[in-house]
Amino acid sequence: MNLESELEKHWKEQQELDEKSADLERQRLEDDRKRRIEEAKKRSADVRALRTAEDRKLYSGYAAVMIISFRALNKQGQPKKKGGDPALFNAFGNSHPIQRIEDHHNGTYSFEYQCIPGLNSIDIKCRNKSIKGFPVSFMRKSENDLSVEREQSEALKIREDEDRSKDEERIREEVTKELEQEIKRQEAQRKQREEERTRDYLMAREQERKRNEEKKHTEITSTVSPDMDERKKK
Image (tube, rainbow, N blue to C red):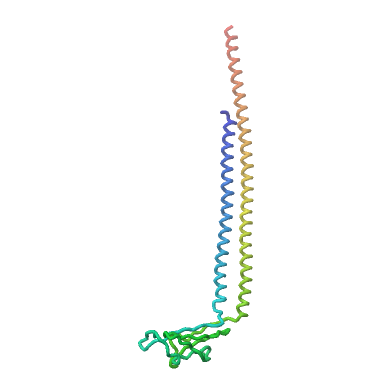
């Protein structure tokens, strides 16, 4: 195998390695792009889940009517199993007496409370003393408050979706730029390899030419020497 054939084999192997390396790098960039987009989607999904939870809170405190239920205890503090004592209890909503307390005849009593926007307070007293767990207070938002919050929540959702789209687009642009840079790098490397290959071929041909000249010179010298020896003998 002459020098040019050896170089051809070497450069063919080198080209295969470069192509394989380029394919791996492009695949790495593509995998990185997919990973980063998936991470962005996951972040958006997490934010959306939190937003959904916040949206539920907007409605969790809104009630027009509440049913308040409680159980009577005997002197030993044990739950009673029969009724008959509604007159012992007084219920108040925002300090206003609630007229009707229903006896369920199993030791439990209940009444309806009409909620109002803003602060609500409920108290149940037995012999003018609040029973355990009362009074309780809570806030109820007005329909206008809830409407404003819903509008704000919808506006926030739109902004979050826009941010998510921008984030995904930014990732695509970054990876596309990286891929373009990688392609340019590979092209520059390919040109450099081609220049090295051309240089090696030229050097190989020059070396081959010199060897041929030396070989030719040696053959001529070998032919001339016997003729000179023959003349000397004569």
